[in-house]
Image (cartoon, rainbow, N blue to C red; front, top):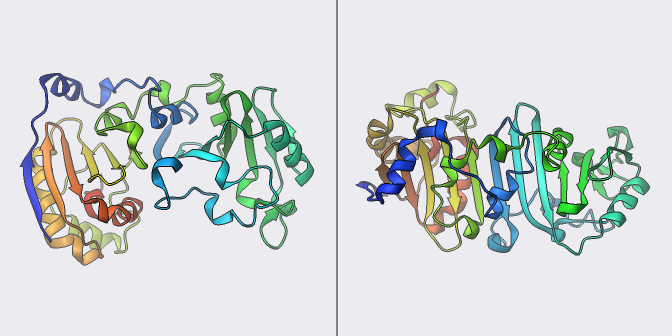
Length: 317
């Protein structure tokens, strides 16, 4: 296992953009699928994961993948999804599915009513709700919709379905009746670090890093193992098919220079004690520390993201 340090050379224009810091926020114009996804998530969202089904293949599924067989009689399912974005923040969880254009949203609305959902909201965002008591012993509403989908919003003009506890807020953002995450611009600088946004199979971005909160060690052990690691203001994970996997640590101000060495030391000495074992090259580019892993370690890095381990470990702020 090796963890090497290096410096990346970037054009002056890119350095100028990074120098603007988090407050400047990169521009989000919806030109890529992942940026488009942010237009449907409500402002105040602090963490987002994104899956592009066409790019992901069998590597990454959606929230409906495990329910595919159970939803066989539903008006939509896993195979109808083009991409999925899941956001968590102040209002809870909101999930966005961009559906294939041939999905019949009138049929979906009728089937939700038939399954026992109740409808509200204007015609441009149809909101449906089912009480948990309507779920059968198998956890299905109407025998075909998972009980996790108690709140569903349809945005037919955008071929979008939203769900989650914050689904209605996401629906308002999607129809420009409330600020979206794209309006807020919080993830612009992170997404600027992705080599090719439209080639992303999986992406995760957060302005509230876990810093080991989901780790397989106790809080005391996590603190001991973190050593001299810094506390990034934001983090990201970018996975592109058959390309190196990038873990990004963004600092607003001082901290990146010391974190570069601390991260390399942590990955070499401490990370294996948490069960993380992957080869990464660590480099710094201004206020950004990046750890790059081979494509073969993609699943391990996705798991590390969920736990705040490996290249996503940090000192608790």
